[in-house]
Length: 206
Image 1 (cartoon, helix red, strand yellow):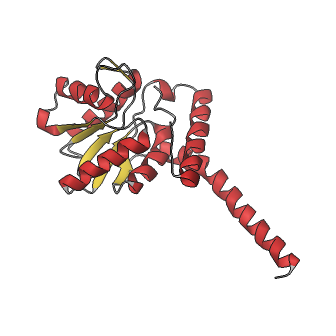
Image 2 (tube, one colour):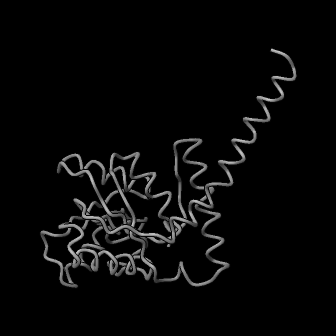
């Protein structure tokens, strides 16, 4: 192979890599502005911080969105996910289940999956539940900037998912915060695609 051909191949690979890098934040921005309420087997509420059973503002916003979807008959079951931090008396999933139960959902309409310390491990645990129940489809409830990566992680866990982001709470307040979240989500997505590990994402720390 001549040097000229090698240079062209290197330039082509570099251009494709650059296009991929640039496309990710654009796709995050695009997905954040859309939602899908298709009929599904379950609604999955991705975890966020809780304080001894009291959902943080981020988690409560997600739970309110899930409650609205359930009331609209989008799915018969809401699945809450998320483990606990060191010293916590309960888990994100259990705090979410209790909030939904205390706000009108019957006990048999909410399943807690109290596992996972980030989006990837939580969705992997949810994927195991889906396999056990014979479910395939889900509506993911998270925050706008988290939707693109969450769908990709759900697909890797064997869940055919669309997203219906919560559009309230501290993550959608200012243009500056939105840009910061898009950047962090982009970096988390690059890491996952390149290493297979998602790590702590944009909103897992709330």
